[in-house]
Length: 343
Image (cartoon, rainbow, N blue to C red; front, side, top):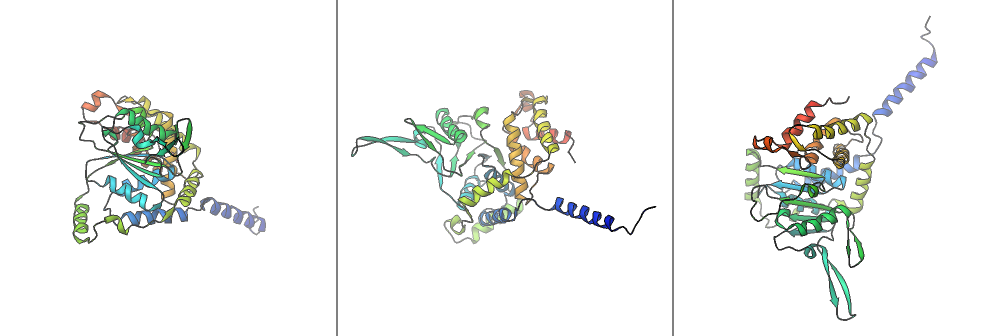
């Protein structure tokens, strides 16, 4: 016969309830991080109408310490959004316009002879900053592109036998135009893989277009970025990047990521699937999206959200399917729909 008055049973129930409460409590304090990111969004929103997805992906890349390629037609706020993001964070910023005559020394720097001490001195180029905006990255020749990608990967350069490390945080945001190919140099797939994300930016909808026109009409400032304030320090950003690395990922979600990547390699519509670097990028990006949403654990939705930006430039659609109008995003969507979501 069961003893319903046994105090040990009540104590055990209390212990179980406490354990359940602890399980659902946030194990990592994400409040400051999320509050800071909301402030960044608010500052950018003073100028930019819409483009929430692009801004969120840029923030995710920032937290992941990964570089970004933004592709879109002229006039959809690619460059201005990158500039505004840099302005909200108290770090160095430089912009480099890529042109067909740009040389590696124009971005890395060059050694100059100092007459006073009869020695060569290295004059650092614009790449020596924290946020680097590369406009029209496909306008420069392969030699210059290669020099840039080496810095992006190694986060350092060697000049005249001396190694120069990039100061953290170090983020490259590159833009390219998908419609004008005359006088451009296509980025090889191996170099595209250096970017954590490829963000496709589309046109605004009707409501957003009206808001853009209205804001321009009502604005009295010549410099639109004048009212944007710095809200995060470099030290805070580095702390947030370390915090994101601590976000929890369950074993079944790691398996889910692996299945997505394996499916890209076995997909009949793809000529080239994603490499293991894509697996690591998807893991890192998923943690960043979880952090943006104020969670200290990754969900399948975070992985799905990150999959398109992580994979679209790492897979190649087979020529036959490309001629039929099938895009990488559509194939990625099919892959995600075909894999059972872990519970």
